[in-house]
Image: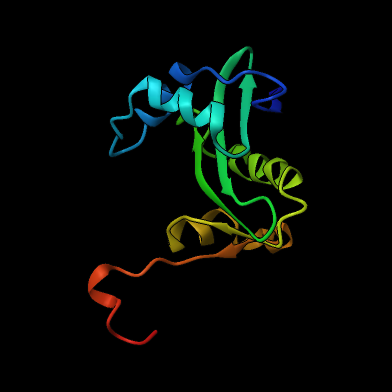
Length: 139
């Protein structure tokens, strides 16, 4: 399979195509296309992956540009579950975050172990969020 990976600034990522990836999730998120377009226009770095001119992957980060970045979303078309597209997108996204001191990948611990544990060389930190009722107890 031949794929192309590019930053949004290099190749425009259509908001409707991103919405279609969101809708493949087990619990789809209701996001207006206008909001997705705004995030692409003013948000942090975003990466798309195409196969035969079809968007099959999307990842984005939120960053201050110096100290911290958070990889917020990594979406892969459900037809490509074992293709390493997510790992490739994160590696590509990290190129655009080279100047950032610490990059956090926000995902479930299960997803991290299943997809990224064997790729510790990516230099990512797993940031685990506590549930609201856990905040009062020490870590």
